[in-house]
Image (cartoon, rainbow, N blue to C red):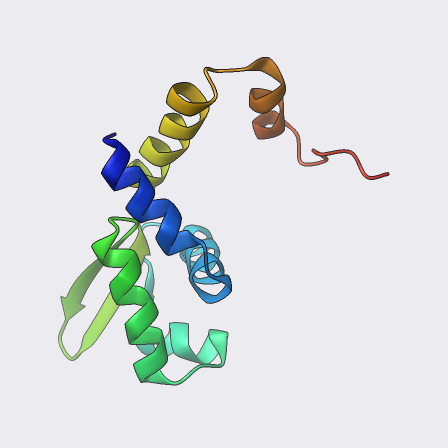
Length: 111
């Protein structure tokens, strides 16, 4: 992944609503969710959700597809993997302590 693409993706994720959207869409799986359902679940207006989804789509983290009158959004798992790989391998040099966080739900340890 190019540094510019990684920066755009990380920048898009650096917002509470967009990070929540990505988490929701990852859990929804490859079929994704209709924009209206996303707005309902996030308790946001359709225009606000459209704004955030557009930024995530421009950053390459989500995909959109039209079915009839509805637009469905899904997380782009390949792009997510590419971003994580870039951060772990290119930025962190596959450091063992950094990689350990990917294998444990309890990382970092609570004090």
